[in-house]
Image (tube, rainbow, N blue to C red; front, side, top):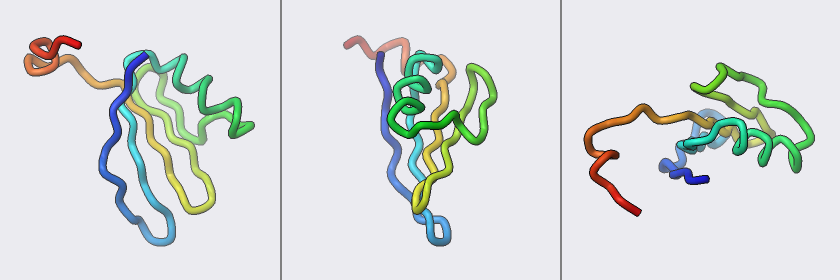
Length: 73
């Protein structure tokens, strides 16, 4: 499982944070368990969002790009 963090942004009284995840099912299960809830927004295999007090956490599956194909971990 891999994911990347974006820079946090303030939106009103809540911080926004976005994660890129290759396996949406695994990362959503990972966050749903300790949060005790399913995402507030869920577009399967594309985007999900948890709305928490003071935080909005977005999780998305990045599209393949030529730059991503060149990066080898």
